[in-house]
Length: 135
Image (cartoon, rainbow, N blue to C red; front, side, top):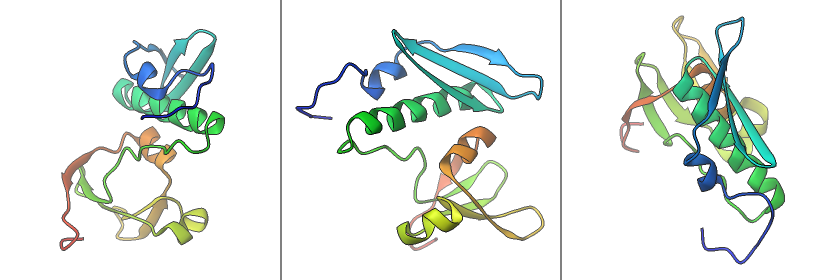
């Protein structure tokens, strides 16, 4: 990011190189905490790797709150298939406040929606990115 803006808040890339501390909650979820004094971000997921990704996403959202012109990177492609063979599609921008960021078909064949934070909590990972023609 080539920006002339300055703030005391570290850039999100600074959090990516830091080693998180992990804490497993009673419900089995893992919380990753990444600190760059005096700032701390936390992310929660089903796995350590997912919790780290969630914490880095939180760092991006926090940086955006300090610098509104900063664009938050979407950690997911527009269309993809995950490790459980569910197909995910990015919801159009005008529908995201109503439905969430992505739609998918659940195990019962029902169409469901999730926001990026929930996907990170579930540790959704793309196995195969779909071409726009496949989507």
